[in-house]
Length: 126
Image (tube, rainbow, N blue to C red; front, side, top):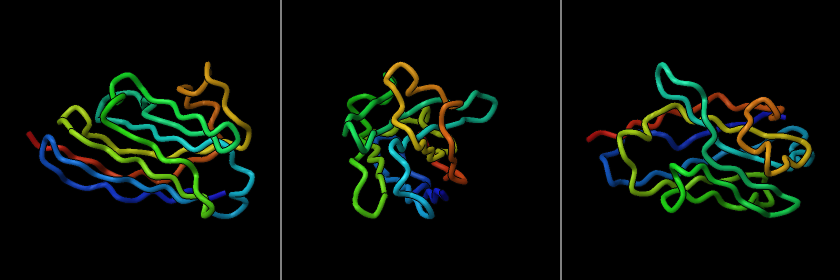
């Protein structure tokens, strides 16, 4: 399975961006797609995720109410709509996938994900 992330860029504080993650290869086997981000000098942290089988969505507290992850569509693509961005959202955003459904208690654990995309830079200026 290959994951391709796109949609990053430079935006002013308060602005919006939409990221996309497309799964190819044996993408039919992927149940959970999610987003993580990593700012310079910081650990990679969970942002949001969605399960194809349960259709449940999950969010980090820091992005609830501002970010929305779509359901996984028929093309195995998921979108992350990011609104009201702040400089604290500046990071490289990575798409991640797992074959088996990730249980809620592990959804934020980057080690349970099987596949990773190449990352897309999001920069929010103040």
